[in-house]
Length: 457
Image (tube, rainbow, N blue to C red; front, side, top):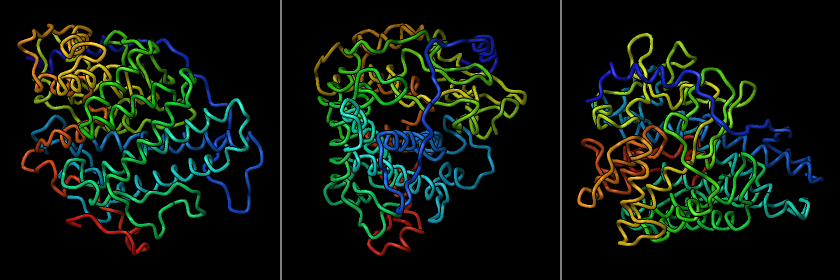
């Protein structure tokens, strides 16, 4: 059984690790908005605006922190789950305790920043005629990858999950695909159905995959679009499509699993880097970007607040020889921390190759197929990388695959969405309990009479 004593080994494991990959600085100043009186006029303007969309995506309320953090807090039972919230911030505490008020400021900020970034993407897409001919497809693909990703996150957090009732009638979120002067981008626009939002997401990501290059520095790539598509299809229980999308990423050969100690950047106070396993990550340096997951998961003596501790309940789920049980450390006050966000300036992994193997395994298992590889081979590939004993054919069950997914992807933002799509309760809260859904921000409902508030708020 893994205990706090064994975690001390992780400190030696993590100190001094250097990951191999490039992390060049952005050489274009991002534009986060365009004044109504100022028209875009050159290809350079368009490039700067696209960089602004990435800057928006990396906001602390989006992939820079809260979308990933809240996916974990929503999925955990207070005090008895895998993590313990010890912080004083009211908004995330409400998410953790499932007592969210209609004026929760982080539900407001996630919504606002997502629509602001979507509006930047819409502006880029409306001005593609400014792009150089050789760059046009790439720029369109990047903008649609970002827009599709954000609509996917919005519909998962602010609407009933796919499979809970009728997706064609359940209210989703407003769909806005043209630029607006108001960066909230949803003024007087009603909520589209969950099904319509998913269709928008799929249209964006499928088009993005067809237009993005295989290699694109640390920006969105063809593989990133396919990886995001695998998540969308898995959430919809479209298992053949999920397996196919994950297989495209794996079969591309553009990514490879790295050793378990090198998956995450555990160096202290060093500019972040990607690894060969990284499909898409938020880039963080000491001059730009904020790793807000370090803020909450990180030790107070290493730049964080120490608001989220890892519990013994989670550690006990690892088998004795599973090296992933060593990806934790004790801080100065004997609290257990994950090394995944130890580096204050470490890049935030949004999509990585290990998830693709687990998605392909689950999707193939459910569909009774072997696209790319058998489910047993995919699961054992991940287990063997971690030093865990391979499963036998008789031991491979859906529960075993889902457990493997939890152990591998813990704290990376997938938890509540996996629980919802598998219709698994969070303690006494059913998977479709309204308390597991964010409210539409009070300010939005007040100013937009066409917006319908979620149940319970």
